[in-house]
Image (cartoon, rainbow, N blue to C red):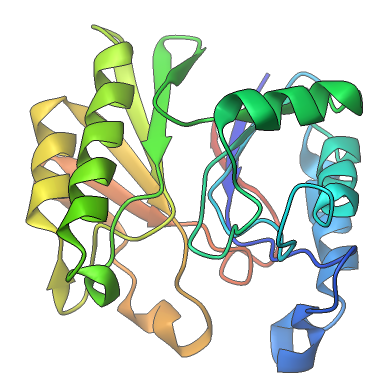
Length: 226
């Protein structure tokens, strides 16, 4: 049994916004994702760190969910990204998944999941581009803390869509929560292409940070632990 993470799959199987148009590493990215998941076993857990589907609603994203569900891995935990316009209430998403028998898909939102000695926590996070909307920012802080509190005394791994820090930017409020609740490692996405060079990797303060955007990991889920 192993734990993996990958973000930013940007699937568009049921809509018309494929990432292949950006060329480079994104050419044939759906096949690359399929190949990259071959390392994942049937009992493994994969955390999907947001920006998963371009679908504007659950129905439009259905083909993308079916694709993700069919990939190897017994449990896939889904975070919200800034482009996940299909995102809805947890009850509606869970009911939609159950109606289609997509039993590997689970929502990581105001909650946490256990993985051995660890608790897997997370939320979308926050980014400087949206700093003006304090209501959304405070809501994200509440969601992150709710997830961390749900973990109790277990060791904590945190998964975000937005990077809490990168070269030239820090979100002190989110970093403070990660350190306050003793998070060991934080995995994030959102950064693509030329922005990869801004990523912070390794220990910063009390927390270890890692970028897992799909185009950064070569469309292979990054193994976190056995």
